[in-house]
Length: 175
Image (cartoon, rainbow, N blue to C red):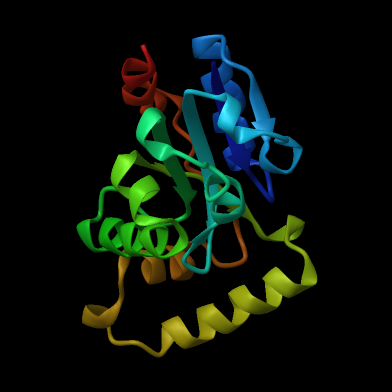
């Protein structure tokens, strides 16, 4: 059996998960609704990036008892450019910190770009983003990572970088 599991706070990851579900015919479930992950042979996890972590991924995937018999696909959804090599390395490091070596080594990882709508952020996230923006603005241009540039460029705005065509390599891998 195969499942798409997602962790989404503001909706971009949920949109990707449901579009992937439409393209593949595989059921998409929110990570908080998964009861027994071990019943699935193929697990596709889509998770929103927040402060270097993938929402719900650690709690969900670390419940896998024997990863050797599983096909694991992870797709992160973040604000920063997913083609930037430094950004990819930082995301991979964050994923590796969250998962057992077995699960990390078994997983194929993809990087998707989401969006942000500051009007929808809760107080905690608005405060965090304001702090990150102020801190980022003080950095010299050459010190700014893709993530920092994305924070500066999008601060206070509503932006949508969702591109469903970026799901095609994941669809190909599932088939």
